[in-house]
Image (tube, rainbow, N blue to C red):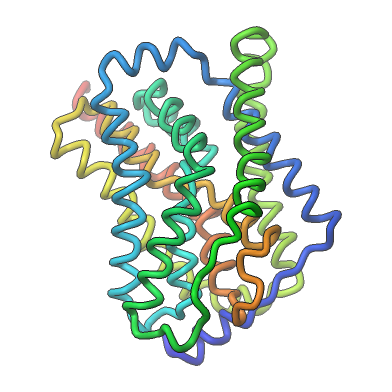
Length: 317
């Protein structure tokens, strides 16, 4: 990718009016409510009896993925723009994606572990998402020899905290309460909400980039390569850590999927709905990286699920 192409990607401009942003926020909140419908307190009790897999999952999600993403962005150097590198770090700083439990089920992985990891990373996102993004984002800007090109990354803590708490914390709590006290309702709603979450993100991306569709299509082959490499790194982190620490194969599958599927919908909301990048130069690179991640991890999740299932059939057959 030439600097000229990277600059063109950064010039992609996305704006949403108040009504469009509110719609996205409401739908994302409903999606997170749907995720929480599968979370029951007893799941945590069972999983925490053997906490090794949970702790390793949190290590992958909250520590290793942001750190290795910083390394990858730094190694890519001038092949990506600074804004694209920040986009990668933002995605890595977000909690686990809202379709990871669905993918774990398809993979015949440890769904209880998947649900627990999603719930914990989502609950901790109020603190960990801004903290990781601030740490690794500023480190990237100052070590990749681009500090003169962009301002210092400053996190509007209250703005980000409020957004994450409203969109993730409240729906998660309400969903768990519904699962606990209205189990029949929760069971009836759980699967429809999973499919809605996939459709929602696709519609969200289309609406966000509708005014820049030609520019988006021109740059997609470059974005595809960057996100492909980044997503492969995330999947490898989860599987490698599970293998090194000799977790049961079902748990290795779960760590792979949980680390490889990120809540990039939250990343887009932070980009479009907060003052996170007020005063920054054009940052279309962040937007397209984050948006394509949300589409690609659906494809990669289905692919990994198929591979895991074929492997199991070969062993049992």
